[in-house]
Image 1 (cartoon, rainbow, N blue to C red):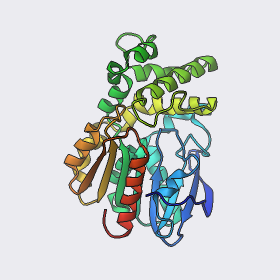
Image 2: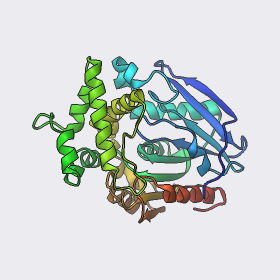
Image 3: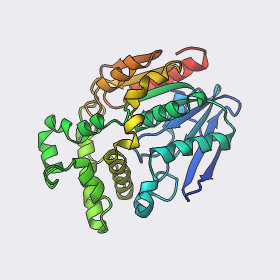
Image 4: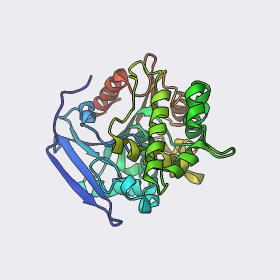
Length: 316
């Protein structure tokens, strides 16, 4: 079960060499087991801090940060299009390592949700000696098949909405690449309209989740545009996890790192085949499917808290 809400006991800004400034916060027990939270998106940010409730505050030093270009980190991606190419998975992994060193942490449990799970996996593959355990919820790996499904394939489930979403995409062009280009258009009106259509499509394909409510995912217009800028940038580049960096191709390297994969059966945006394949390749991982939920519902979050608590007690 989730723990009671808490507030951070410290926060700050980590300045990176390329000019990015990353907001970070720590909560829980300053002497506890370090646990890092990686939020979804890309571009969603930490939000109001509900992630803290998944960690026992008496046992964990809980670390969260707004990934570059979003949340309380600056500059926002939509305001710094000139340097958008510097915002990529490799720079994010370097950010995580810089934050770990800044906070004086040797090793930590890494917890990621949605896009955060792909980032957690990429981090663990690059820095296995820095990861004690991994807990992933609403699992993604950032692979092209997942991106093509969520932007094109799932249109077979929602043909009416998809036909409107993809109406202006030139034949032979990937939908996500078309939207990534629109989000870099010099005309602010073009970017705003594209962000609205992107948000409407994302709201559609998560609508099989029992907790879904009609309406935009992001009510704030600037947040909506910033999220669309980052998501299309990452997805059009296959999350910068290509060639010898494809996560599922490397999943066997995770053997020896305890991991828990928690996923909803109704997650049509990211079907359960992804965590299932990851589990099959990752010796020592635990696969938990929640039959009644979609993309990160309350049961999944309770299971996430239980898994994180279990590691603090010596087991999953």
